Amino acid sequence: MNVSPEILPRLIQAVADTIEKNAEEVTQLDQAIGDGDHVVNLQRGIHALQAQSAEIAQTDWVGALQKIGMTLMSTVGGASGSLYGTLFVAMSKSLRDKPVDRQRFADAFAQGVESVKLRGRADAGEKTMLDVLIPAAQSLQKSAAASEGLKESLAEIVRTAEAGVEATRNMLATKGRASFLGERTLGHLDAGAKTAQLMISAIAEALAS
Ligand code: ADP
Ligand code: MG
Ligand code: MG
Image 1 (cartoon, helix red, strand yellow):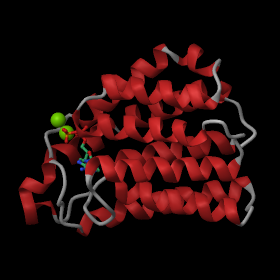
Image 2: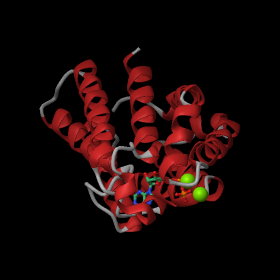
Image 3: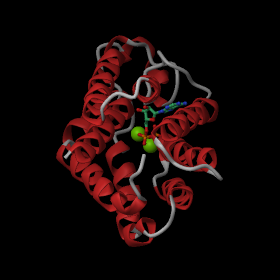
């Protein structure tokens, strides 16, 4: 990607806006099969990122992603805090000493998602954020390899994320708090999958505009 981290304040704002706009819906999802704090957790992290926006914009991708990851890890809390922290720190590591282009960025995201899997001891099909993150990483890889146009590949990742969150509805939760409810999780979307989809879509829309 020949985009600099100067774009990050705009992307952070887009993420803040979509979480704010959908706060009630997501809170209800986490209340149904979790403890209802997912939005508050994420917003703590987003506000911390907003406070550091100017600094983040002035570093390189390795430094910016590392800073985002460390900030999320120390502010978000809950299961999602350490998982998102891990995602960004692993992306930063993956980009070290490499020029950042689209393929490398797709590789870094895939590496980040692999690290989330390890950290959460979870995989696809367990009704978590990974049911959005894993297909999103595959979508990025596919469009980078095919050298698809930017608009086309952003539209594709948006569709993929939407399908991913919808698929969690009929999954049995086997990780996180929802796993305590067993079959009672059937019929509900996973809150963390929903926010992953909202954030990916908001970022894609901001990049396309
Ligand atoms: P907590 O569950 O600790 O209250 P949050 O509400 O912030 O934390 O986040 C819950 C979300 O985290 C879930 O909806 C799910 O998507 C995700 N999650 C929980 N455990 C795992 C795990 N082991 N691997 C991946 N994602 C997980
Ligand atoms: Mg929760
Ligand atoms: Mg909690």
